[in-house]
Image (cartoon, rainbow, N blue to C red; front, side, top):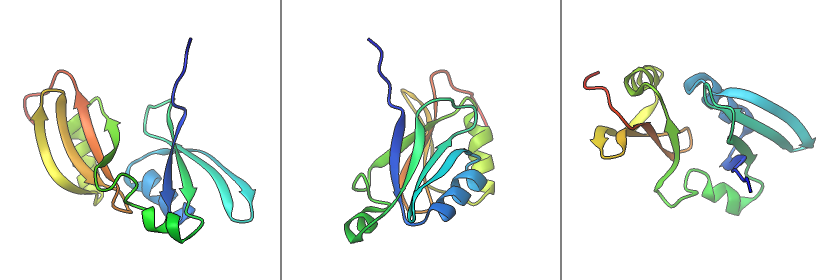
Length: 135
């Protein structure tokens, strides 16, 4: 048997501002942007080098959904962005204005820092496994 998570839906306020943030600030690749109806699009993004588990942007359609934007996990870290070079990506993201809400730290599982996206969702930037000794 084989299964995988293909997409993770992220509720956003506006497709275009979210696409701009993820492609310009985080260097994600826009894989697909297909109109479904007058106000709905199928928007898929991938981090650099990734081939699976797309981020699916889902525009909030009503007040309840709009209220959940940025709070989909009740303030916990929501998404985990693995990297093969923590310090390269950390410095690049910081230079592009990404706000880190928890500074880099070593944990048993790797080197990690927490940042927030344009809506306030919390992400881990994580280099798992063996760690570099300095930045």
